Image (cartoon, rainbow, N blue to C red; front, top):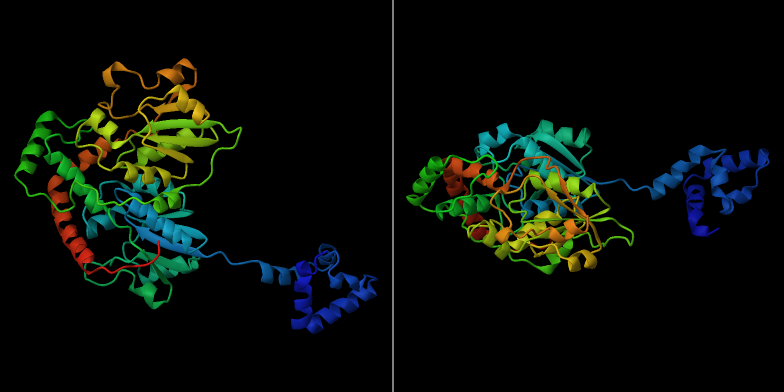
Length: 429
């Protein structure tokens, strides 16, 4: 047996000579060979002396580091996902606190997504191990002690952008004072404020996103358009400032292909403004096989099928949103609208699925069925969509409450402008 594998015995003899002397004497009296202590058949030795395992555990067992990060996670985007990815890299287990609807209303105004939807999005991320619902917006001393004692948290994590309470104080001051705070780099190019701005901008373009599953009356939509036509565009813009890199895509990827005999399931779509409905349909699709391959339509296809104001998120933003989902194994960035025989062969697809809920105006072009080939092969299946949420229905919530969100965006835009004006380079991510 390798001497190093039992080096703990010799260390124990060095640090605890009296204890080991007594053990060796006892072993001799019992007729046991002291050669056990030379590194032979250690597991046998531990049988009559099970308490000796403390030395082995002390040397070889490493405490798992648990880190905590909180947020509103409203209109979840790849910036949120990347923040949680970075947080997970600072420990072994990531616990995420999702701020309650009531606290968001009190500090920021009404959230676009309810608690249930935000929990589904956070729980669906591949880097999240545990979720605390209705977490407080501010890290109070009581809640911090609860994190340390009840949830066994070692460090509290936040981005390098300032997080101030209504009174102007630092929301993480107590964690910093306790020496249990770590900082990560903010993901540039996207924010919930930015996404709200894109939706508001799209509504002013004359073709506002309409809720296709539960549409707002036409007259009301026209009134909203007219109001927006007279308002100044809120800062946040309609253009994405995201600069895609191959490194970011690799960070989000699993890096593993399917096994030779895996049952590969394929599902495609725009996956614009990634929401709880997307998470649930991907979870359902994954349950039909061993490997989930997701096709993401290019921007041009989405625009041709749904209108020039779409997509709200560009192809790379949408790809990262899908890749961050724990149920997804691989994505095709810029997948063809039609599922061809060549695609099925190339990716060894066993089943093509489609949900029952989708944008009603996201129809087949010219009557052509994009799933004709898998249907003819008998490998196409419609699966029940667990939620009736759509990208349009989420956007419509913002449009219907446009005055609140325009006001909130204007205020947030000012703070973000100040952040970008004063920010300095932060290494890492």
